[in-house]
Image 1 (cartoon, helix red, strand yellow):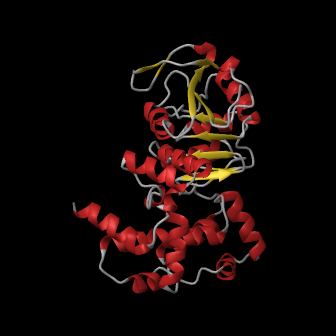
Image 2: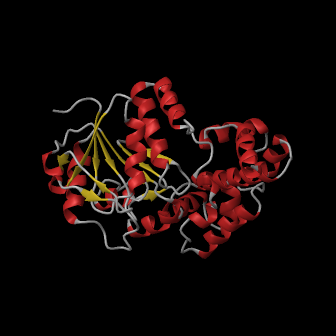
Image 3: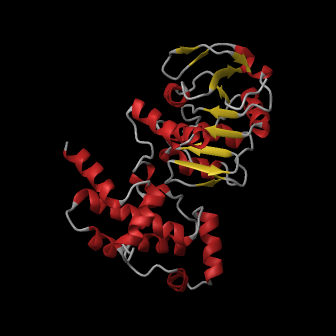
Length: 317
């Protein structure tokens, strides 16, 4: 019988141990009933060789389970997952209130058709391959986790912890989530993460040579004039056509790409130099420190000063 906090973690042989243990540890003791389920209810062996016992056979799990969690697996090199595992994820994910994945678990959701037409993310090193193999998925390579309707995907490995904390906050409020994060000695909202990796290198190289030049120009001069009109003029196309090109080949809008590049450039300056926030905001194209502060809060979950304090301290430790 379904309860409001019933969580089923779908596991099979080779599952990444931390993708299971991290989210389960967050949910443990915060009002959830968490159970591991596998095909036929048999024990599985994780990627580390450590065996995992399970409580349920996937065949016996109701489609109306509240939350389905799908951990990742080592890169499948294009071979895909066992058909029975894919079928179970499709069935459960279609009926659940919400379905989540950690790291490369996004591949399993994509194989099950649950990411068709949705935004999603995965480990930064797998974003390009996921987008290439599943063109109907709009991959966002710089996100810690992405929510699109009832489906939530998270980035590499420990991002599953961030996702689980977000679920706790959604279900039980910020105080419960804050207590869980404090107990685990992790950030409630991680101020860095996937965006520390190069935005340009994380984007699948566009087939359009002109679009590649536009992307490179933004990276070369984040503080330059990169309005939609200016970029369209450089490529000698209409603004509408440029927006279509970006959505098809980059997986987002021109404005989103420019913002990600500017955030990355500002992060690098905050970590490596003593320039004031005002100076960095102007250099990176935000215009004012208040604009940069709002963007940092929305994208990274921390203002520029807090980001600098955290990462300058880390790098000098």
